[in-house]
Length: 145
Image (cartoon, rainbow, N blue to C red):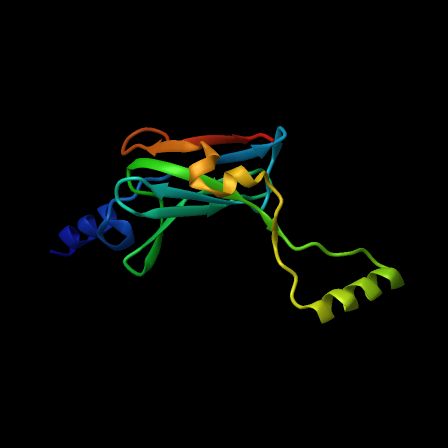
């Protein structure tokens, strides 16, 4: 019975759905994008898988489902968004300190997406991929202006 339980749990990670390894690389202007959030939004199952890129632009998808997060994504068709938010800050020196104090009195800084805005919305990104139950799910996402 224990062997059966282990076999079943191994096939259904993420709260009872089958997940398959998926990831890829994000580039913008032929350079890897570090710190971007890649979101795969399922067209069929209403499931979202996300990943964050490393210094080489590489990401691995994880799915949050049934109160748990697990590596991988369910098989199916996805629309994809890519965002990278940064909060602008100044360099050193007195002028920067004065600017920082002025900014602090104005309230918290708002993060800004540093990638082209079209990639932040599934309706405008024109990015779509299919996670397969067999084969390699290694997606090359090349962003342009």
